[in-house]
Image 1 (cartoon, rainbow over the protein chains, first blue to last red):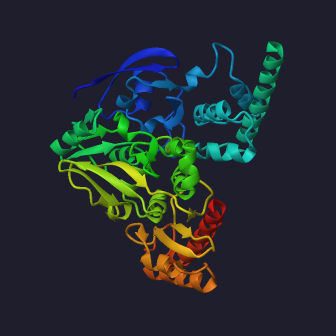
Image 2 (tube, rainbow over the protein chains, first blue to last red):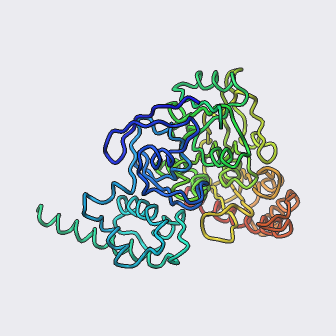
Image 3 (cartoon, chains in turn orange, yellow):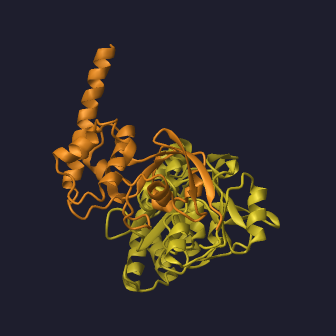
Length: 167
Length: 288
């Protein structure tokens, strides 16, 4: 079978990888680029474990052909922390024990960040609806929702401080 | 998928040629149904033709006094067109009930329509709105009403090589539309019943035009002309609403399945039809 060569940008870095024409973006990320933080849960778009950001919008990478990524921007869980410094959402997941087995966590964190990037002050209901496409079979969700709301509050505080310093 | 070919044409003509050249080729827009069906083995296309690189197929625009929605436009993008969302809130809300945010960032109304599920959420809303599809194919372009596309579960009236280019919504006029579905959860589920309504009211509150469509109660989403006719010429009083609901009930031919019994679906179709008419009426008043 002829493999396709795909050039894209992943977490800000230009990359090239090979894919079968029918291969998923998820498989390319994990098996070609060795970015194994993104997980495969259901493979049918129901669980959100494979959530990545494609050209600014969160999608299930299991339901994207790798070939579609040609020339596109992709952001994965590996790009959420800055070097060794955890993103506030990641820290709050630890503080609130918002994970047990951890398999769904990368998808939740990428999705939650996508929410807070566009809505810094979501209601609990908005958080729950936004994360409806991410399944967790361990936590019962309450801890996850609390972690996201707490991270949102901290990010708002950070922005206020930055704003005051700039003024 | 052993011999699958992947194409990403940049013009409608190229896409027509690729699809016409290979009867086993399938168009790809959001992929949220196509890829799932390929993975489960239900379908095994020889080629996938990605329509998202065709500029004319992405985004929304004014079309006369109405709107045109490119077939590869994801559901979430509809909300960002404020004029569209203000004119046709029922259509935009219906499209944004499908799946999760992740799914709606990919899924399209044209895909929802051409997947031909009787439970597709956006389809009753589009039928009620009087939407049409512009179709491209080897014989050129044609425009058909949305309700002419699905023939049976998983089957459409599109000829080999044809695909939907855009969905057209008519001018809003003085009225309102609405869509509701019944599901046992609050999110991430498939309609047990869906109903869409689109009303035009005159200055006195008399209904001058009405379209009622229901989903998941027949092999395809259906327009119920008798239900709309029961409302026209009335001020949407109780006898008119009862006649409308009775027409909806008479049009239902649902099946029993794990998501609901035929009896439940029929009863809920009446309930939802009354509710969407009430919402559409309220919206019509706000637009007056």
